[in-house]
Length: 202
Image (tube, rainbow, N blue to C red; front, side, top):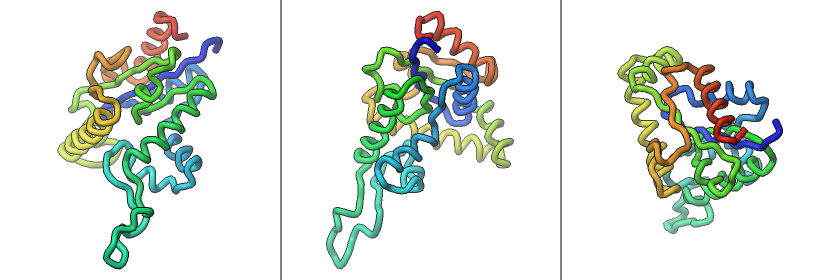
């Protein structure tokens, strides 16, 4: 690739965002970062990957050990959600500075908003389509799958809206919004690549 490009993928849960990201990576021959961001952030910070994974794209406080010891609050044994976000943001910026990449979720579009080489995409799909995919993949009922999708999307929206001061999933926030159920995984990846070329990003 002659041009550097960072494709940031926002996605509804169960909408095929991760699969589309990896299809893009295969077609463009550039690395994809999803859960890999968690591993790298853990490595950069010295904390365990399990610690980051537990609170991935959620807002709360993070406890390493018991906060209360002998009747007082041990403030050295916790990290705020803002602290975790800062570590992860630094990791995302480091990834983007190294070269072309596809980054899934985690407010990457906002974190890298000052970079001209970014393409911000949001992938959506009807709830029934996402529930069917999740039910088959996880071996759960459609009702459970729908509930899971709604809960995950709510958590992602709260996380994104809090840190970016914008609205998760709203078209005006992104360069391109696509219903991945229309073209399928490969077709959606092809459409994003074509859009990137016509917009001068590739």
